[in-house]
Amino acid sequence: MIIVAGHLVVAPEQRDAYLEGCVSVVGQAREAPGCLDFSLSADLVDEGRINVYERWETREAVEAFRGGGPSGEQGGRILAGEVAEYDVAGERDLF
Image (cartoon, rainbow, N blue to C red):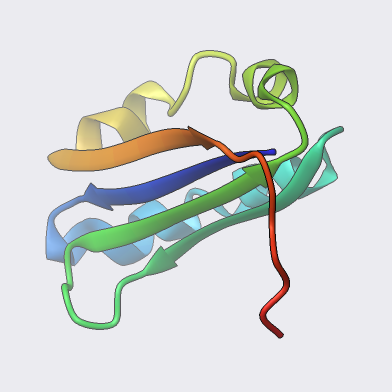
């Protein structure tokens, strides 16, 4: 399993518009082969932060979906970020 997690930073006044522009991408990702979960969300404390969380069956599934990454307009709004990919060997249910 592959987990992609981290955050993006945008100008606080642009965060809602950025997330609105991602609605279709989230929907497409959730329908993509190999996607187990995909979420972009507004941070509850930092007004310019967008939390990123994705879970995929395989790295190939991630790469097939991702393509070139954010569009030029979306990418232009990102001021900073830290997003990493983790290759997970096992899991344990907590709920």
